[in-house]
Length: 366
Image 1 (cartoon, rainbow, N blue to C red):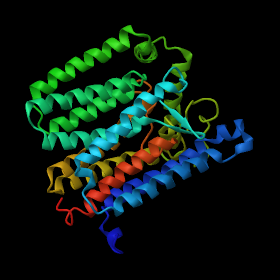
Image 2 (cartoon, rainbow, N blue to C red; image 1 turned 90 degrees about the vertical axis):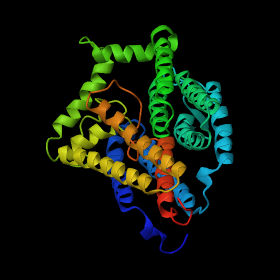
Image 3 (tube, rainbow, N blue to C red; image 1 turned 135 degrees about the horizontal axis):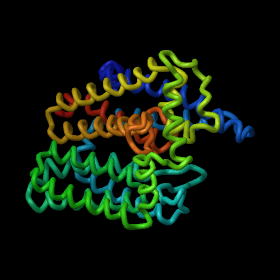
Image 4 (tube, helix red, strand yellow; image 1 turned 30 degrees about the horizontal axis):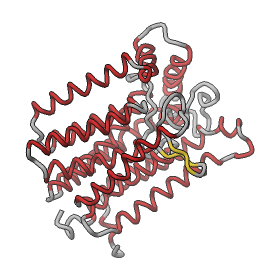
């Protein structure tokens, strides 16, 4: 990378991501206080692991941006990525279930969630197929590919992530001009199959319970506490919050405060000002990412950029709607902010690839 490449970085993207990481680290340290009390022998270990994964993601991103070739456009990369992804999605069933789901692999004390990798592979694969393979056969193969990927994740079961992949894939296929009638028929059939999985199989029991409790006025204590306490945390923050580190909801009241509900803790400690800043930064990322995508001359590169931006911002939208009680509880982390190694590294790789597309767009004729 040349010495002046840093100044070529898209400023809106860099500013939004850096500030989100800093706000997330501040909130993650505070939200992990209960974990420090439970495990005093490893005090600050959770925060240090959070920082470690940020450094891993930044390091991976640095090397990614340094690559000057159009690797993200190559068919061999699509094939190689899928040859890695699908065995991993099958391998999760060999590991013990957590909370009734086979979503994680554990290696040397570290957990890895292959469905996070699936987001990146899906974007690269569909971008290649939709640009280079436009015949009816390849269109059907594209739909079959997304069906298989969504289905494997749904069987873990991880209905939230499978729903996310379905929306992400549909977004890319719409941009890639896959025939709308064919897309609607496929989408309706897939939604029906997922609905049947949720309604009539043991794997959908957990989802049925969450949805029922979300719409029922007689919610169970565990679920209502989780959703209600998130609103309490946000509401008690007022305009400017109770100040960093002073959250009370993180002490036994709000489960998963350091991951799924990091936004609520931030709202309690930094108030409306802090939560508004987070929303603004994701909107800035959306604007910057779509601006990058629209500026690229190569249609496949543009589709990749649109997919990466949509993936990050749509995931943030799901997390925020859960925190404010507009969506049933779902273990989907807030990009760049929530505690979680695989999600953090995945988010940083996605934004690094987006920056790569911008930095080398002229040299690579993209």
